[in-house]
Figure 1 (spheres, rainbow, N blue to C red):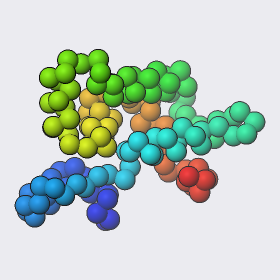
Figure 2 (cartoon, rainbow, N blue to C red; figure 1 turned 60 degrees about the horizontal axis):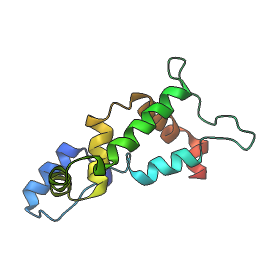
Figure 3 (cartoon, helix red, strand yellow; figure 1 turned 120 degrees about the horizontal axis):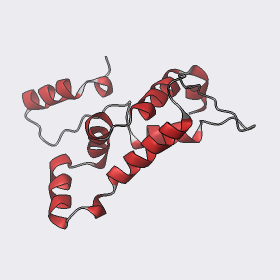
Figure 4 (tube, rainbow, N blue to C red; figure 1 turned 90 degrees about the vertical axis):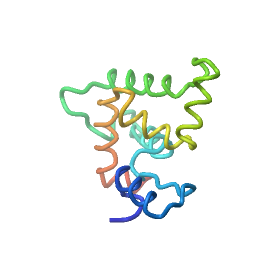
Length: 127
């Protein structure tokens, strides 16, 4: 397993053992750059979808989940005191993003799409 593929629990455990609080281990799976690459590569030149969704997941749901995720990232809607707490707690935007993606923002359809995109060989060659 590569260091970038460690789970957050493993990362926390290894950080505690090393005592190096400045060390930041991020997952290579859910990142802002990964989301941007996925969004850029979703459509063929003729306008058809490259990644096929399961029957129970529609594109409207994916777009609604994406809108919810992006809206959740907007800290300006919170009081300044709460904004400062979040910034101090996560320390890095990618940590905040991964926490929202995994735990706080219900974006199941977006996660399904991301996993299908991530595991599709043709889209990964382009990315």
